[in-house]
Length: 296
Image (cartoon, rainbow, N blue to C red; front, side, top):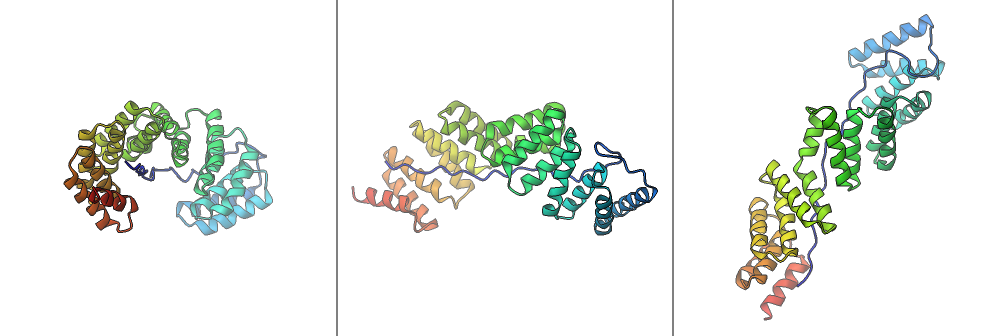
């Protein structure tokens, strides 16, 4: 019997990118006591209160140019540039802010957030870890670290970070959503399946279905597991649920055909192979399975 491929659903989790509050004090660098600078800084905040970003950016750029070691100006400019969707311009200012205040958890968190937006997950993870070394109660860093791990397929580590966030703030909505997300548990189940930890995989698939009873991919991957264990009756039920919930799932139809063939129901098997081919005419595995069945 041919082997068939696992369908791994892309993990979609909520990554927190909040706009940080404009810093009102210095956490590093030298304080600028210039009356003119203070006035300009207040003007920048006034523009921000009105969500008028461009004049705020221009003022902060001037302040940073004149006061490159003032942490508040540098960090705030980075935050506002990010809010204005100018992440490439924001990055060097976040990096500069970290140099000015290396023991500031929020700085490392902010830098990690920008790295994550750029798809630089290893760098993002490094910054989130630094943020948590400084402040282990940084809930946002735990949440985003969990998302970064998930984006690298490190689902157990991802779940651990969401749980850590909820230990600090049990009602934290993003971590609740991420931890409870059906795709997250399904993906973790796939990870356990690949490691041969079948009991843990089943538990994760079941958890996914408690969250979303209509989640077809949880049924599909549970079917793969039962098929691996040669539990044909359970396999058939899982694939039947998959195609009921997702009638365009060609792989599930093919695998259901395999399960029917394993149970001696060749007519039903042929029907499923044909349904798979109607959805995906170039589906070689389904065509080979059907040809082998008809050649008997």
